[in-house]
Image (tube, rainbow, N blue to C red):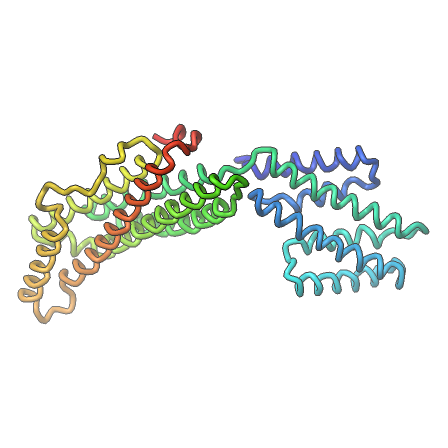
Length: 364
């Protein structure tokens, strides 16, 4: 079992909220602990948004609870009706995320049957808010999330697997069902990658220069993800037409493999370049060998398609179409690699002093 940062922060937030409630001599500090559980968020920015919504939700919950308590007393039916009204108001105001805690506030206030109902309601409301505030402080200070490292790690490991499976599939070396399963898992991991990117996007910087650097990083990471997606599409296409690729003429198949290997290696080098482990000029798009030249490759593709079309005329399934589809993915992948290279070189040129030590130390 892995204990992530959010799990640890939840435990710390509960302890801290109970400590604060006890320090302020608030009755029933358990409600502060419950509030802290609901208020923990995966990022500081979301925690900030959460505390705003929690305050609004708790004010609504407390107001309805006090109103119903004064008008209808503390009957259990009145508590249920008050909860229904709070739910309706919260949904109308689109405060869904703080709905649960607002209901806790309603119940916590309306169960009291003493004479000093208004004073008790104020104290109970304050107890809940102590828990929310404690969670925000813990989320901001204790193990603050570092989503850039998580994002790059996710991109790096995912791209590593895509490159590995592409090299196996294009040589028809992998077992068919294993490749299919791997592609399915890769697609699921990409969905998780998008979530991490959103968390990184939500990070806020209060220094103007840092905000500018963060904005440019977002552009680079967004292109990294687009390029990874293009490599996923290429892997799926190679997997689908691996038999057609295997039946290509030897000279053309060798050219196909060499170009694909070149692009995959280029992608690996770009990740190295971004972490500062590669000279900026090393992976520039310079092609010396004839089989790697784009115009030459396109010429060979057209010649191969014409040749297949003339020799296999009348057949429903011939490799020229498969070849065309696959190379369209390769060209798309290539263009996105070039764009990623441009963005990385630009970023490293203008922000060479802005380094993430954790990122550069943990990789390669």
